[in-house]
Length: 275
Image (cartoon, rainbow, N blue to C red; front, side):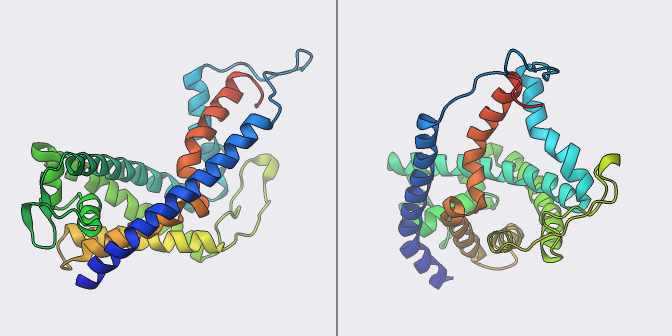
């Protein structure tokens, strides 16, 4: 356990710096393109059979659920199910981690005591990166959840247990699809027009790496919650930090970019620039 604590204390500031620089560069590039590119507003007045104008919520539904119901669920059912289950889990977990991080940050900023996870003490001034990360990533364990959420801790833990269940099932689907080289493959009929069309899958390195880390994160969280391995919360935190560092440089960046992409995609449907 001590070696993981020491490693976390050393690499955490470096990882956060890399993350901030990576996100800054990528968002900066996006902002430059946004400022310099020509904008097309609405459809041409002579466009025949233009798609009808959608309301905001109808456009939002089309953006969020259209691709999975129209394509992924039909083209690759195993991947489609895993995609849905996994995203239910990851959205819940990310919200939980973000709230936990905000609470910890405020407590540290105000100079308030925090638990010492390694010593299992409810109040201390252990502001080391390893301890703070154990508080955030171990938010489903009794000591941390009570500190973070007080009387609401059982409700938080109950909700996130459901999310962990979805994460296990969803990630197993996605891992199986990836290892069988069916990621991105069309293995079933999409519709009558595409009947019999099949495309091979692939095994991209970034998805294999990220999916393996996520697989380990899910199982270390299970072991930590069930108290099966002493101190495994630090392994869980280290894996989470690794994923955090990789975010700007892999497809995980979509977790940040999606908010921007979602806004543009909804606007395109409202303006009838996409069917």
